[in-house]
Image (cartoon, rainbow, N blue to C red):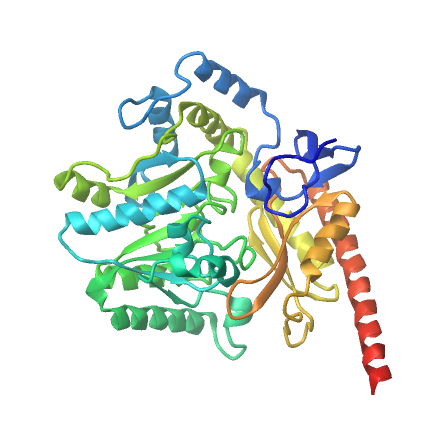
Length: 460
């Protein structure tokens, strides 16, 4: 076979999928994988759906495309109503795009326009270290992930500053209570507002539950209520990124709905589980007060894209969202999610080099450490997590792994984000295969360390 012309992320062509169904992937050459990550938290209803295929076919026969700056299609309005049932937290409007990065760009622009419409020169954004909000330049500007920022640092906006993220495993001192930790993070955010000048801050941007940087970190109790208070005190907007953790992934429709006493964000990004990967789709959900200010001002949103609100994507997403709300899907996410978490804590957490198991619903991560007692990190640029990914692959399991400098330390983890229809036996298969992969990688790492130690002794 001639070398492929498709330009991929890596220097080598990735394994080629020839067919997929449910959570099973079949590769060229015959290898079969159990996909424990839904791609990367995307294929929430698996790789095939007759209902979604029919919905796309019906839409294809009526309005397959509409240029949204000039026309609209009914299917987009129906999807909007489906998503915004009960207008949670005052989120009354939605704009559809094609990727998580695009939705972040749109969110930053609508926040900027909001303040201009109100006649306030608020141009500063506060984000968090170790964060990731997308690969386009605006989205990357509010991302704190150092490795992803570094190649484009000269292009990134200087109007963004960063505070520490809520990361109890490494950020909360052992002698500090959870309330004390949240208070310290709130104080740091308050201090950053004052450093920038409170009237200059447009918004605080955060992932409700970080996915691909720190690995599925649920916020400490009261954290988002605290940052909401700081934003409200100074009149700034709150923007939450739920591209990965939203749309049922963590056991509630919006991940932020699990935060007691929290009224929600002003703008929210969603994507991955919105259309389940059948056709790319993302969106921003916008509070009514933000839209009202724009309507009273210029009267139009100063942002549009060619494939915005694509009817075929909206048709696919509508069926996905209806599937999520019916047939007990959400209760399955919660029930099997608890089972998966308990199995990870029982069978994975005690293993060598496993420092933490954390998550919620069907979004979990296993963080690796070089020393379980001290939480010591692996040497810079080591690839322990990728060794686990490779070992899992050999054993017929696909998991997503990361080992990159996302901030002041290297976080090594593997992530699990299985499809929403997962069963308990399937969850246990994932855990058992992952256990073998970690044991294989641990053995290799220990042997490698022994070889290096003997080599150093020989040089003395």
